[in-house]
Amino acid sequence: MKNIFLISAVIILFSGSCKIIAYKKYAQKLNISFGSGGGFTGAYDEFLLNGKGQLSSIKPFSNDTSLLKTIDKKDFKNVFKTLESKLLQKIELNQVGNMNTFIKLYKNNQLIKSFQWADGATPSTELKELYNTLINFTTKNPNE
Image (cartoon, rainbow, N blue to C red; front, side, top):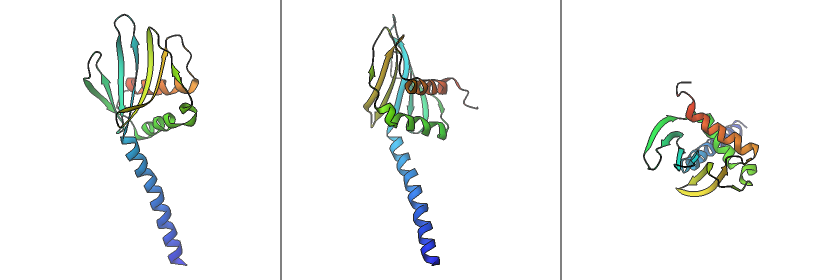
């Protein structure tokens, strides 16, 4: 009887840890690009959140990046869960204007999902909340 309990406990323990390991491997292949801009200059304030939780700023008119900080693991995981949610996956939004806001999801450096909307457009509540969460990462003090 003790052996059955011990084997069951080991199986439960390993099945939970496999899920965490699988998620980490999956997330490492993902990148989120987000920002806003356009207008007369065509310049964008663009940021990149990679699969390791590192947030970088992308300089306008170049591919140069500078690391801003590493996002808290809990916040990082919540962002990716939101992006993968069925509700967000159903949204199709590509409204281009003079000034634009965007969120792009890449897997293995291939674009898999993109949201873009012009100033004055009304994206879904979920999309606005996701963008606000992402943009708040860029303004929070890394020591908070």
